[in-house]
Amino acid sequence: MSVVGNEPVAVDPAEGEPSAVATAVPPRRGRGWLVLRRGVAAAGLLACLAFAVGFFVFTDMVGRAERRVNASADAVVALTGGAQRIADAADLLKQGYARRLLISGVNKHTTPAQLADLNPELGDLVDCCVDLDYRARNTIGNAIETRRWVQQHAFRSLIVVTSNYHMPRSLVELGNVLPETELVPHAVSADRIDTERWWRDPVAAKLLFMEYLKYLVAVARTYVERDPEDSRVAVFVGGRKPVATVPVLR
Image (cartoon, rainbow, N blue to C red):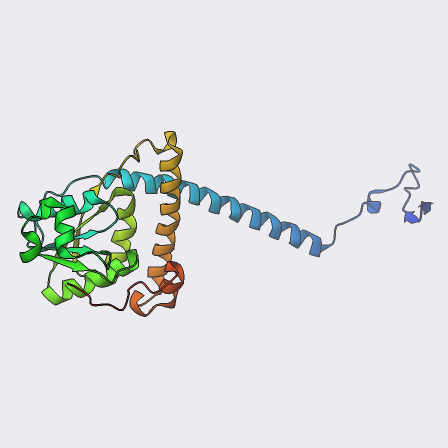
């Protein structure tokens, strides 16, 4: 036995050299932490990969959502956020694809007459076949108010009109509150935003990425909650209650 520094080292009598027993063996606890760190790193890498793949799947969903309606339904709902949404919904009503139209999320200061002036395609439809929802404050509120309207009229099928990038999340929210209602998407291309070649347009890329995040939150939230109308999570996500305390329809 010889001493190197302050540590004893076993010496092989035949060779006069330190033997293999002198090799330090890492403690088992250190090995466990190493395995744990590697596992966490691998899980994080897989999560990032799944997130990235999910984004490309989402953009593909947006592209496929641009298909137009070719089947009729009991009613049509237009989620406000673009003039073309209302125009397309009114056109569907005129062509007989649906019997009644709900425009959800109308500004509380907008009267039916003003809405008709702003959207001439509505014409005389406002008086006979169009209902206006003033309560919805966001997409969750759109779903809540649409459910009330659908139940009031006993509709079984519904054409959903909104922007193509907004369609996936809208279908999640509406499907959550209307599980037995057939939803037929009618997507409208976003104004001045090329969602098909989004990688060439920073504005489109940012819009799709933010909508992807909202879509993931909507999927997770609707998976665990019972009803968005009584959900604290829905209030937290939207920053306020999804519906306002004013008359439902005018």
